[in-house]
Image 1 (spheres, rainbow, N blue to C red):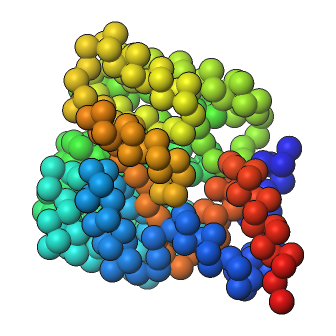
Image 2: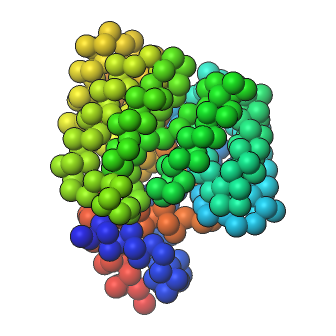
Length: 308
C-alpha cells in the first residue's frame, strides 16, 4: 500500500514542489544521482570503473511532449558518449547508456522515437559501446519492443528492459531470449493496474524467477537487475546449470544501493553493472527509489521535518 501511495505521489505537483525545494533533499539525491551534468556522470563513471564495476548511465527525464526537447535529450546522450569515449570509459561496453523512449519522443510518435534512438545507437557504436532501452509505464512496453525489433538489423546489440511485475513478461522473455539479444530483467518500479501486473510481492518475485530461468537458459545476454539476495543466488545457480561463463551474463544494481554487495560480486569475477542516473529531472526517479526502500523514506521524512 505504501509503495502505491508513493508512486501515485510522484505525479503530485504540490508534493514535487515541497521535495524539490527542501534543503535537506540534496544529500539524499546525491546518494542516488550522479549530478546534473554530463561531466558529473563521467566523474562518477570514472570512480566506479576504478573499482572494477561496469556502468550504465541514464539521463533523467521522461514523457517528452515536444520535438525540440526530444532532440535536446538525444544531443545530451551524444555529448555524454563522446565524453565517455574520450576518457577511455566505453571500451568493450564498460560504460553504456540507458534511454527511456518517452524521453526521446515516444509520446509524439513511434517513428520519431525510433529515429532518435537510432542516432544514439550510432553514437554509442562509434564510441565502442551499447544502448539499452529502459523500462517505463505499461503503455510504453509494446511500442518499445517494436522499436527494438525495427532497429535490430542495424543495431543488433540494442538492449531492452523487461519488468517481472508485468503479467506479459515471461512471454516477452521467451521472444527476446534469442542469440545476440541483450535483456535486462528488473522487478519494475511503476504502478500498473492489477489486470496487467502482479501486485503481491511474492507474485512479483515468482514472476522474476520464471523470467530469470527463461533468459539464463536462452542464447542471449541476460542482465539480472536485482538487489534481492535470493534472486542473486538463483542467478549464480542458473549460470552454473546452464554452463554460462562469467562473461555471458551480468548482474545490475542501482547506484547507491548495496554498494558492498556490488563490490563483492565484482570481486568474484562476475560482471557487475551499476545503473547511474544524472540530470536535473530527478524527482520521479527519487520517489520510485523511496517507494522501493521504506528505510530511505523514513530518513527522508525526518530530514524534511527538521528543516529550519
